Amino acid sequence: MQQNELTQEEKLQDEVLREAAVLLLEWFDGHARILPWREEVTPYRVWVSEIMLQQTRVEAVKPFFQRFTQALPNVEALANCEEDRLLKLWEGLGYYNRVRNMQTAAKTVMQDYDGELPADYQALLSLKGIGSYTAGAVASIAYNLPVPAVDGNVLRVISRLLELYDDIMKDSVKKAMETRIRRIMPEDRPGAFNQALMELGATVCVPNGPARCEECPWQELCQARKHGTISELPVKAAKKKRRIEERTILIISDGDRAAICRRPDHGLLRGMYELPSLEGHLSQDEVLDYLRTQNFSPLHIRTLSEAKHIFSHVEWRMIGYQIRIEEPEEYEEKYLFVEPEETEKNYPIPAAFSAYVRYLDIRLGQEKYEEEQNK
Ligand code: SF4
Image 1 (cartoon, rainbow, N blue to C red):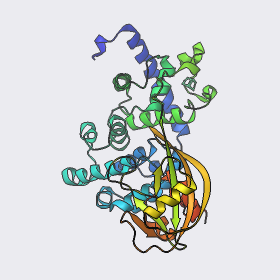
Image 2: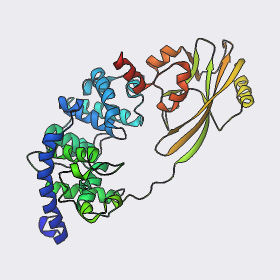
Image 3: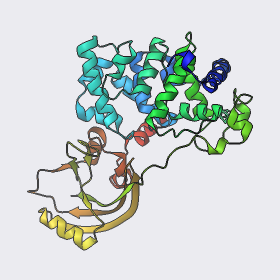
Image 4: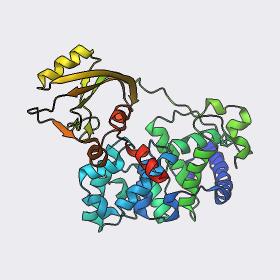
């Protein structure tokens, strides 16, 4: 939309936003957090950090980022990484399609762009797993292109600043916000502006808990603060309820090795490894009967504590059993019997199983990295 097609209200809001942008950049210059991906800014590092930061907190991402970029320092290394190693490096971050898509995109970048992420918003957008937010972040932060990067943080802070009651879960509202920000984007510092918006949303106008208006550079401009409507904003339509799935997790061990299985190549957590599990909550007798159908000879069974894991659309409510069996001779191909140290080192296991792999003294992702760093 051209400037002359804007409504009077939109023009006024743009003026507020321009003023807010100046205050925000001043504030950011004194308050930017020191983050590993800001120390050395390359398109690849911005991309990796932005993908990791989707659905995951900054503090949790830091050690993963260091490790991932040490192991795979550039697009080429990512494109050529073997799948199990790639998933192992991502273990604990969840939403594994993110890293699979990154690898697909890395292969395209090798093939079509000589291994350098393109300095072009539309070209970035065409890469697998890169949506408007990530394309905007890479283009503006790494290449200084004046394009917006609108995520939940940005939608929240601007909704409050301008007191907008549009439902931020709608794509049309996000698109309108991108258009709005494009109009007022400070051309000389687009990357800093996008990062400053995110920073304000992450540290001052926070999603959970009270907004820290007394620390906010917009306290005099903010309409929601002025009218006492902060707690009403942003408007977010309720999400669909998660489906509950009951599962029984089995730790089947012959004393030295324990069984793991590879998940199918489709659906939730595809291609990762897991402890054997069954649908529903089974009793000890039902589990023992099942194990006999799998040609195992159980010697002893004990009940473990309950656990749950929340995915975006489904929640697993789990019970578990630890079963000692005789050393197995013939069993189905789907089982791999592996020593726990080997599993911890080489097999990517989703965090959903963390409550149960502990019984094998296996630590996953974040937990393992933190322990190693504290040594
Ligand atoms: Fe958020 Fe308060 Fe700043 Fe408004 S003044 S943007 S509500 S922190």
